[in-house]
Length: 274
Image (cartoon, rainbow, N blue to C red; front, side, top):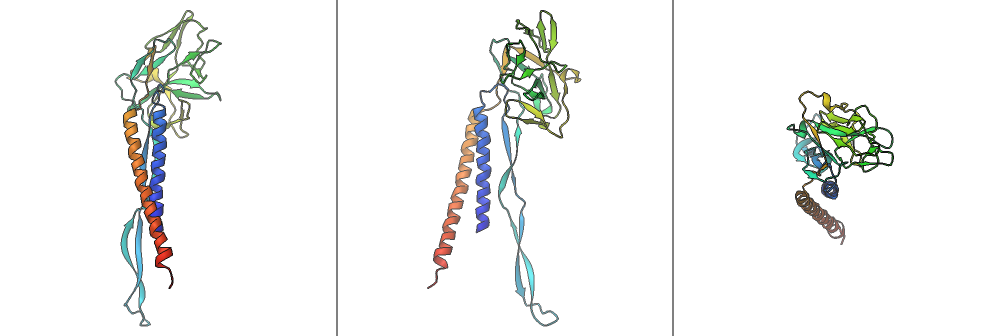
């Protein structure tokens, strides 16, 4: 009976975690370049149940010996194994703002590789983003909406001198003094990237380093100025999944309540003396 408590509780915890992920997706449905997270559920290992019993099999002393008989396997519930970003490209939205940029990766599906803008976080480390909602700070540097520097292909901040500029489809920032190539990185395996919670991706500890997208043979991409990539969250589907997770949580909750009633009856009624 107590094992049933654990199994149902594991189910509740898994659905609660699913709810949290879906809620975060819905919250970021309007965040440019946001990639929705998907949860994967996995069952705990099955346990083999056996029964020990005495059978009339005389031993050398003429008495019976205990034997084991197999009853079957029992499952102990599920858990959220991991959350995986969905890297499918979102739709484009025209904003008319010159500092807004969207990366479009030609005909190559994002599951086979991903292009990203290279930025520098507050600790001076290189990170990556699909959110091209950029701005220009007081010193003329191109920055993210969190104030992080947008880098060129040499790893230096892109400085516009507070002047008007245009961006070519090849990712070249055209200024009066010349051209500056945006730092556009390419990851052959996007699953090596992990989110850090600020619209940025970081390379996993054992991940393969990103390379300059311009040096990848056959890779087609372009940068569209005055556009933003929308979040790839389908809000209506996320709401439907949220309701499904809630119903599953509620079903497991009812199982826990029923086990509680059964245990109460076993302790306070069946075991009562007299």
